[in-house]
Image (cartoon, rainbow, N blue to C red):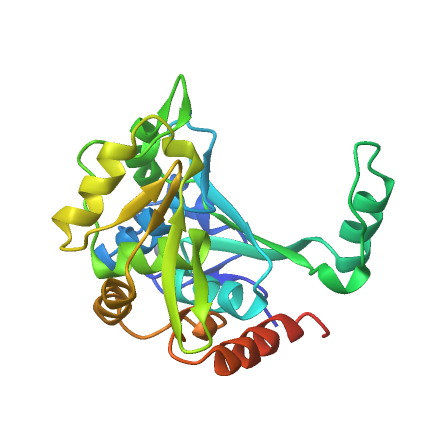
Length: 248
Ligand SMILES: [Zn+2]
């Protein structure tokens, strides 16, 4: 039995695909434009580029939503190389319990396993180098939102804000863009959405929230609750279900 992975170019199996691509005539896979949009959306949110000074940088990101992480790992293979638990519920709980600066109560039920995905090291990832400046990660000036980019950003950095039990707005948080609020506002406007902002928070009206959710398309697995803005009880039920998956 082999534990290797199949090279999309020659069809053979290898334990280390990256090494095979570096040493053979088989080429590094070129991500499809959908993959490109998914990675862009994730980089806007939870993702970060590692080794960005090298010829072969890679991306990694954490998330507590197991179903989402499994889905995206499968979808991006062989660009992604592993999906692991980086910190278990118990570890997260103990870590927070021991923090000396802690002035809040900790409850084990509020913690989740934290999953991490990392990609292969590929020349392709050089295209994201210009996101890294002296001020840290910054959206590049030529960024434009597409439904796919916005959708992956939304599951990372978006939340549902309830006002009444039957009406909610969606909101994006973007701390890394502080000082560039105009730029982020225009990103939404060029995609056809008007927003209100408060520091690094960007709010859509109830109507704009509905149309943006429709524009982004069907919910991503594990994040169905972030598409439920018409009924609070249904939202809470879906959210609970999403977070219950940690007991595996
Ligand atoms: Zn090959």
